[in-house]
Length: 407
Image 1 (cartoon, rainbow, N blue to C red):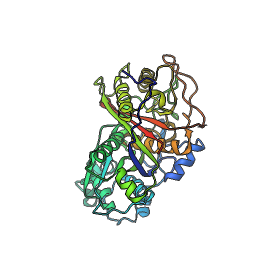
Image 2 (cartoon, rainbow, N blue to C red):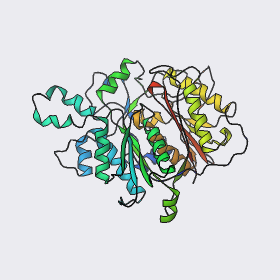
Image 3 (cartoon, rainbow, N blue to C red):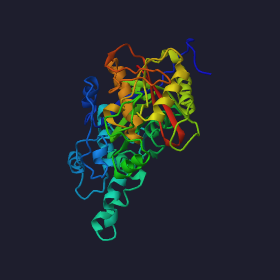
Image 4 (spheres, rainbow, N blue to C red):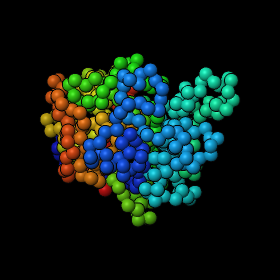
């Protein structure tokens, strides 16, 4: 059963005390905020990767080259950081600074990072050289998903708990969920959670093969949507226990009040027509938050702009909210679909929506999907926001929902 409008006791949730982000619409938190408030998209032409597909796709690409990122981070020139790890370290460092953290051995601190690309941006570049060019072989060790996570944790000085989540496009949402559970269970006092993914030829070619890439700026929830734009990004949130927050008189940006994960077990890359996985994830998140559907003020939708996802998610939203659907939008027309990082990118955007008391627009929308008739919010809208529901759905039926609430 879905929730009705009956009164429920709100779950206080887990405190969010810091955030960091780098994406196609900004190199830090403030730049992302400004772009969202000014409806400035980061979708454009592919520049940093030489691909045969470049003229046929649009992407959300970060302007910095790897060399520039290395210089910003002041890393040794002989490092073997991949682009995924570099972007992740930029965002994680900002999150730590934003939360005014000092990594202290006496405070049980964890780091949970999500990725799907891992280090393949460098191994695919040098694959044909590994047997003949010894200086490129250092990137073999940084190929696997956990390498970037460990590098970031080492740079931050985190040793108590370090792990990597990879559940396709719900990865970062699941990283956030795991962090909250570790705090609620008393295992850790503080966890830095999120995800990072860079663009790569492998993902470009893979999604092109699936025939779900658009050659134009994507149009989420539009009847004439052609497909998604890939993006690269990284974002992290600092979660802290109430005891720690109260003891140190810390400022709370918002709270993670609910979360849910489900799988419709329907298809390797497609969602079911009834949106069963999405429906169950949203239903579970509402239950964890002790909220009714009527208390959600804004839905940050997964909204990939693919024919299958947007229809399936629309059906699931209707099943949860019936005829009282709150304002909703997909922010992927700003950043592109950032794969494993998407849940963290949109978690940051959800918290910004609460801070700014604003609904960020669903760019490029013109025509409603005839099967559902849902119309997203298409211009910046100021309104009272207490609770934001954020969806992240991945291949293999991995569906996750997070709920963020005003502190």
